[in-house]
Length: 298
Ligand SMILES: Nc1ncnc2c1ncn2[C@@H]1O[C@H](COP(=O)(O)OP(=O)(O)OP(=O)(O)O)[C@@H](O)[C@H]1O
Ligand SMILES: [Mg+2]
Image (cartoon, rainbow, N blue to C red; front, side, top):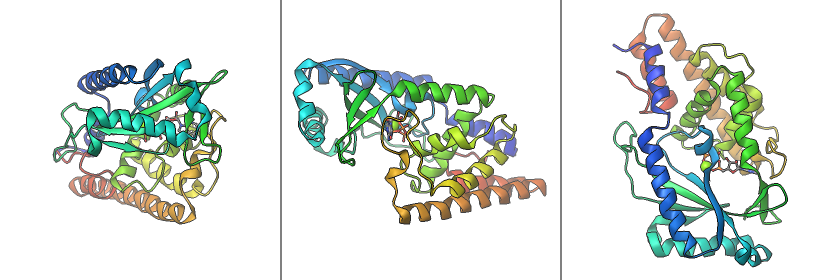
């Protein structure tokens, strides 16, 4: 039978981006870029968000593409942000069909009809892409944000990218893995923590270097500290956009705290079982009560 150590190793590698996924993301990016360039004046476009930072969990969905709009589209900045999103939505519906396209708070999502197997594997395929229309400002970007009063959010993916790189280095290369695993816990629980970017933002402060060397203990402690600190306001790390913690009201926070504490308790239980030599039972707790079907039993 596989040991818990081996299972964690396998789980970690399952959450890494594969070459095939990167090829598929790049193919989809080019396809969307080529199409949108026939519809809008687009100055630049690039893959960004957690995909670009390697903090995305699996199965691979909602890969962010930034589309930086050129001069011809500038007039759209003077109108409500929902109109810009609607224009992108309409264009994408024309190509991908009504049932594949959804307008969101800051982006338009395109789903590709990809399914997963019992281990939540997509066979190297990206399930969906979030297209984010953006304008350049002095040093940063502005994106539509239908949940804020101004309607626009300033952002700078480069700042978030650099912070993740620094944290990863300080944490002996284990920081992104812990973020990916915790995001997997979150999606397996039905996304109690919203947005999942909040997990990454909190990890910048809550995971104190050095890395202790044991993923089990790190996960148990991180889930507990997320619960302890979830009621605080978590500013956007570049200090440009609204607090990243603005996506949950008190009821949602309270529900998330209960799930986070249950997750940490399940991790403690699994650690205890393993110490008692009950390897098989420990594996099942990690899979059934913490991470879901991507955590291997063999
Ligand atoms: N409140 C905010 N202010 C400014 N920029 C933000 C804010 N929230 C998110 N962003 C930026 O937009 C990017 C895309 O947002 P998104 O919600 O898709 O997060 P993500 O990090 O890509 O996580 P996920 O894995 O859930 O896709 C983030 O990676 C971050 O760089
Ligand atoms: Mg994203």
